Amino acid sequence: MLTNLWTIFFLALRELRDGDDRARTPEPMVIDDRAAVRRFSEGGATQAAMRSVYDFNARALSALIPEGGRLLDLGVGAGQALAYLLHRRPDITAIGLDLSSPMLAAAENTLAQQGLASRVCLTRADIAEIPPAVASEPVDAISCLWTLHQLPDAEVLTAALRQIGALRDRHGAAVWLLDFQRLASPRTFPDLLTATEPGYPGLLREDAIASEAAAFRAAELRGYLDTVGLGDLSQRRTWPLRLMQAWWASARHAAPGHARPWTEVPLDPATRRQAALLRRAFGTSGLPRPIRPPVRG
Image 1 (tube, rainbow, N blue to C red):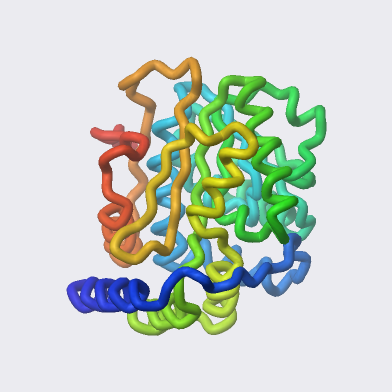
Image 2: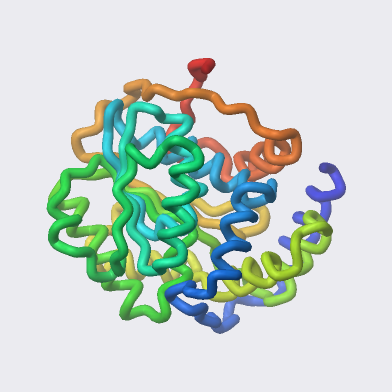
C-alpha cells in the first residue's frame, strides 16, 4: 500500500507540470457491444478497483436518501453499483434508466440473481430526454455514476443536467454525481493502472482508459451546472491525484443529521483496502456523512 501511495504522489507531481489543455476524447454514448457489456458486468463483480467505487458511491449516496426512499439512477449500466446500494439499504426502491438494451439486460440479470429485481423498475431511456412517465414519478434522490463521461458533447451534457435540475425542482430530490475527471496528461491514468493494478484485465483496462479520456474536467462541469441552475451543488475531487470528482446536494426536505438504515456487507480484503484508499483520497469533510455505526446483518 505504501508503494501505491508513493506512486500516486509521484504521478500527482508530474500532473502539475503538464498543464490542463488536454483535449477530451469522446466515447460512444451507447454501449451496444455485448462483449464490452459482459466485461463491464464481470469487472463490477470481480475487480477491487471497481467494487471500491461502488462501495464509496453506496455510502455517500445512502446519506442522501431518507428511510423508505426512492432513487432514480441515471445510467444504471449492468446494475452492479445499484445492487451494492440496495443490499446495504434494504428499505429503499429504485428506478434505473439506461439507453443500452444490452446493459439493461445485464442489469436485469444482476438484480434477479441477487434477489433485488422486485425493488427496481428498469427503463430504456435517454438521460438527456427522460420520458414524462418517469419524470412524473416521485423520487427522493437522483444519482449518476460513471455516466456523464459517456455523453458525446457539451450540448447533450447540458440537456442531461437540465433534466436533473428539472427533476430536482419538481420533487425536491437530492442529487449525487460521481465520475472520472480528465487528467492533465494522457500518460497518468495508464501509468497508475500499471503500478497499482498490474493484473487488471487488458480489455477492461482499455475501457477504463477510454472513459478517463472522455471525462469532463471539474471546471468544465461547473460551468454547465451553473448554466442549468445546479450551481449550488457541492463538489469534491480526489487528492492528490484529481482522477475522480463528486457533486451533490441534499434533498430540500432533508432532516439534518437524521440517521439512515444501513446494513454492513463484508468486503473482500483487496476491495476493503481499495475502498479505504478511495475514502482517504476524497476526504470526509464536506461529503455526505457516511453511515456509522452500521447495523449488522
